[in-house]
Amino acid sequence: MAADESAPAAVVTAAEIARLAGVTRAAVSNWRRRHPDFPRPAAGTATSPLFALTEVQQWLDRQGKGRETSAEVDLWHELRAQYGDDLLTALGAVGARLLGTAVEQPLAEPAAAALATLSAERGAHALYADLVERCIASTTRSGGEPMTTLALERIVAAFAGPADDAAGASDRTIGTVYDPACGIGTLLLTAVPGAHRYGQELNPATAAIAEFRARLDGRAATVACGDSLRKDAFPDLRADLVVCDPPAGVADWGRDDLLLDPRWELGVPPRSESELAWVQHCYAHTAPGGRALLVLPSSVAYRKAGRRIRAELVRRGLLASVVALPPGLMSSHSLPVHLWILRRPAQGDPSPTHIRMIDLSTADPDDIGIGMKDCAPTPEQIADVPPVEILDDDVDLSPGRYVTPHHGDYPVEYAALRDRVQSLARDLLDLLPELPAGPGRIEAAPMGLGDLVRGGLVDLDGTEPTSRTDQLDTDYLRGFLRSAANTRRSTTASGTLRLNASGAQVPQMEIGRQREYGEAFRRLAAFEELLREAAAIGDRVGALAYDGLTKGALLPPSATSASSGESESQEAQDQ
Image (cartoon, rainbow, N blue to C red; front, side):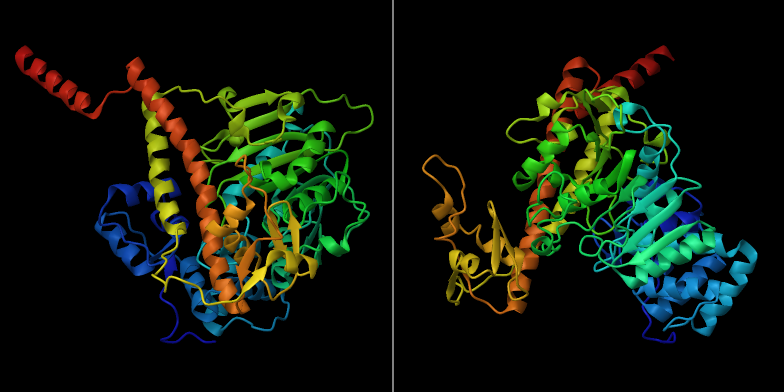
């Protein structure tokens, strides 16, 4: 559509504000905290706000920080005017225009003219790379297509490079790189210079952008379109390096059709553990001596359903390292994630003696990978853990369980943790849904969970049911099974919760209503997971505060003011 009065008002991310002002994104974060008159978010979410461009420009001008809007920003807003929030289509149209390829929705004349001028000035590759960066920064709005963020790209690239054997890396030449869920190619195209790249992506629009990026960058890449788990485009490929930021929490990933698949070297993944299917898919495509790096939700490290597969990873020495990363690195949610580094032993490799646990969970997500040189952790953030210490009843791979916090600069660390608590409080409130008052009862006939399982409509993995039909929403099922009545039925005399499939019931509703409940339950589940992270941060900041106060490294607020007053009085006497 052409730009008109109905076009959305221009909005910018924090990263785009930083570009306008010529500062870092961390500086923008500081402005938001320290200046009460900084513009309030006009859209987006609490963790990924979008600001009205005109308000930001006015504020920057008042502060003496403003710059003229660049031609590139003007082009970006021409694209928003034409394509609205469909930025993938916009990027596809730009890439096609730069490469002379036809697309269904070509650029309108204002955007095409601006693109021609800028590409002549800056070069097609540099311009497209910056537009991709802007698109990634903008996808944090509600409903945006999940994408690998630039901060996460830097982290994966840093850990993919040469490192010591404890982290699972080596100096061997990397000839091939593979990403089975490559999206727009962010991880695939930035991992290692000079390697041939193979990628597969389910969405044709994002796969096309990955191809455009590779061609404009002059990189050798083969990108296939399709579902890597159900229809592997490169079944014989064994790559020196596998990188992957797979889709999380997918219930229907094809388990029923893949029960005898040879990729499941460690066991058939439970239906509720799609991430462990991706782990094994990536490992199956790793060449001897090679590595696989996967970005996974932190809950994959401790969920009960995946315990057996995690244990096999540890027993066989395939897991080299787990890196706990801070919340705020993902485009689609604000939950913490881990980076798993796997290795496939080459012939003659010695058996590993430990798994390296690295805890970067309290790092500033705006700084990690930029201010931290090569994402290098300090010795206090590392623990080399023997496998026998991990192989207990939980097989918990969370680095925070093994890395002992070390307190260096107490005031700086305390201030950083206090800021993190404030950020977590905002994130938690954003996740907690507003729930209006109801009639006090649900007028719906009950459905027995046992009947649904026997009828083949629901699959039961431990305490986690998963729908096998588009007429039942999985999150709706899981939410109602946590009702007080179902919990009582499933709690044994010893207090252990074991789902009672024969007695558990859920109300019968049409699918649209189920999804409304399912969305509320999803947000509550995300709230609980972030609350778990907040509790860990709370323990850490509490221990730091007690330790700092009792050692004299920190002072109570009143002591600070009293100390300042005493100093001023002494100075007056001296004069």
